[in-house]
Amino acid sequence: MKLVRLTPQHNLSDFDCGDNDLNEFLKDNALLFTEQRIANTFVLEDGDNIVAYFCLLNDKVSQEESSNNKWKKLKKEFPEGKQFSSYPAIKIGRFAVSLKYKGQNYGTDLMVMLKDMLYRSTNYSAFRYITVDAYLSAIGFYEKNDFKILSPQTIDKDTRLMFFDMMELA
Ligand SMILES: CC(C)(COP(=O)(O)OP(=O)(O)OC[C@H]1O[C@@H](n2cnc3c(N)ncnc32)[C@H](O)[C@@H]1OP(=O)(O)O)[C@@H](O)C(=O)NCCC(=O)NCCS
Figure 1: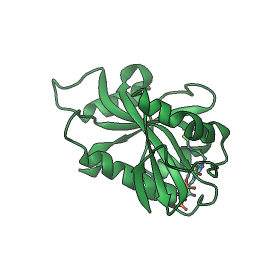
Figure 2: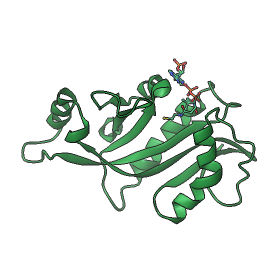
Figure 3: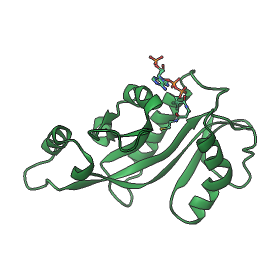
Figure 4: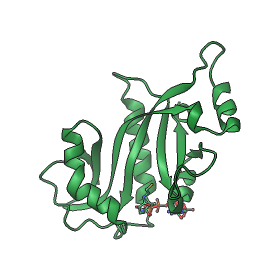
């Protein structure tokens, strides 16, 4: 298994995670998003098969989007005088495992790789959190991977804003 950046050479025709939007994004938009510098896509390869993919972009965790209780707790992590109304983050824009590989821990393994890759990428811009607008059906998966719910109610009817604190890896 190898985690690599998506290239035009990847054969994506067989990829099916069971969700049309996520399938279409990978096949029709992922490379365009990279070209336009709005999101970078990474794929987990098993030989010629695509096991899973995710894409990343910059984000922030802000008071505006948090429930009062969550924000109070989150702010306590920072020393006096370093408490701001938002903190830098990286967003998981998309995350999907192929149906062929679903339920075999590949999603979890990929999340560990993603966190490790980001933990080691300290050369340029700093960020404290990983965020994701989790599908309601995937909240359990993110909770198992130590993400917590941030937003008080549903942002829209299909997703919930969740976050992972990179300090958990320190
Ligand atoms: C959600 C998804 C990424 C999970 O990947 P996966 O490889 O099947 O998950 P894993 O096998 O690593 O599961 C790890 C744990 O999370 C649990 N889990 C997985 N999917 C879950 C879900 N949708 N809800 C609740 N728990 C879930 C598993 O039961 C497992 O728990 P266990 O360790 O106690 O057995 C994958 O099913 C998928 O791509 N779904 C369609 C697209 C999607 O919903 N993406 C998320 C967009 S926000």
